[in-house]
Structure formats: structure tokens, C-alpha cells
Length: 307
Image (cartoon, rainbow, N blue to C red; front, side, top):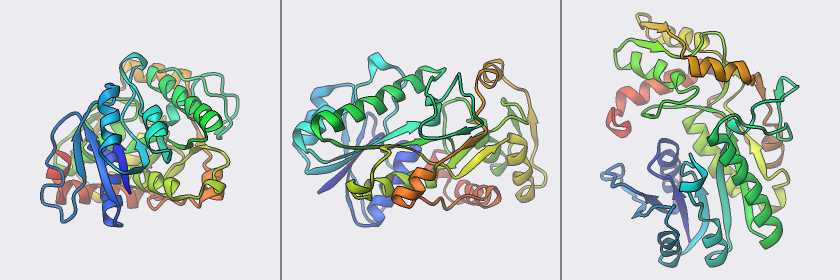
């Protein structure tokens, strides 16, 4: 039986694929573009060129492979142009679906400083809106068809090689650029932070969630984080300068980012249900340890991240 990873060539997806291969799983990856990520690896995934917005291509992936678990990590940035593979999976495999959701499902009208799995979800972005849709659709499929669905809501992700500018992405570039010997101008406010998760922890969380027995999945959609309390850029800057004393980091906050922080406040991210129900425990819960590993990855494996 194989594990299917949609979005498997992305920076979280590829890390998850590495972890699955390392533990001996057969892995199938869908991608719209060719990749040489595993060209020299001892174990390789099966890479299928397919667009999940094309349902016939999705059906062909399931028809030609013995898949028992789907990790749905492909980005859904606008509802009209992205189609998830859950219907095909339910029809052809009847196995397990693990979806990547986001802390971006939380937005306005939050009255408490701590975000829990039951906090009101009223996102302020299209991305967060589509993820709420995915969570609710997964719950519907679970109730209506018995699909073994579960999802992890990851907060702001920190990791190397990201190219898309987004809320919180400056946290990653603040580490990556100095590690490569370049100055960095942060477009976020120095004193306003977000709960974060390191990309390796994110991959591990999806794998661990998939491994949990169905009888342990009570909450269904789970918050997970490396650091539950918000981490401000100035804290990351201080950690970077411990490792790279001459790092040149300045600030020029973007108006759109400031508008986001004016509308949303995410002070703390409670992932206690994940910890209690399937023993979630992050490895990179210390900012200095995370920054040290990030710098090491960038300097030792720049080709892995397109740097």
C-alpha cells in the first residue's frame, strides 16, 4: 500500500515525503512540474505529473496506484480553481485522508487570547476561507460516507526555500538571508508575532496524525505548533544574531501586513487536543534550536531548497 502526497514537491510536502521514505513507506507524489529533488536519493517516490484541479487526472492517480492514505498538502488559494481529491479517494480507496489546514482559519471576532480547536473561525483571507471549507467538507464526508478524515491546522511555517510572499513569511527569510550572507529588510512589525511551526515539525505532525488509530481521533481538526505562544520577529532576530553576530536585519513593515495585524491577534495556539489524543510533541520547540537547524540546512543543502 502507498501513501499519496499532493503538493509533495513543496517545502513541507517534500520534507514529509523524505520522512515517509525513510521509515519504509511507498510514496506517490503528485506535481504539476518536474522535479529532481530525489534524483540521487537511495529511495525515491513515484512522481506523477497531475493537477488536482483536473478530476480525471486525480482519478487516474488512484486507478494506477494502491493508495491507502492521502496527505492533502496541495495549496488551495482560491476556491474556484482548486479541487481536492477526497471524492476520488472515497470512491476508489476508502482509506485515510490527512489534510493540511492553517491557523489562518482564525480571524476576526476572537474574544480570548488563546486559540483553541473550538475557537470561532472567521478568516480574513481567501486562503483561510478555503481551508475552513476543507475542514467542514472533511467532517461531512466522515459523517456521510465514513471517510477516515483528519486535519492539522499549522500556524505560520518557518523553513528554507519558500518563494511566495505571505503573512509571516518574513520570519523564514530573516533566517535564510543572513545564513547566505545577505542583509534582510523585514516587512513585518518587529514586535507583533504569530505562533509558529518549523517545517520539519509540520511534516512530522502530518505523519504522526496519519498513524494514529481511528479510535483516537476525537477532535478531527487539530491545532499543532512548534511554539504555541506568538514569536515576534525581534525574537527571531535576536536568535539569528546569536549564531550570526554580524547579521544585517532592518524593518520596513508592509501596509497589508499591518492591516492584517490590526484585524487579527493570535497570542497563543493551544494544541492540547493533539498532544492528548495522538501524542503530538514538537521537536523544535526552542527558538535557538530551530534557528540553528535552519541555518545548518541552508548552508549544507542549498540545492535541496533551490538556493
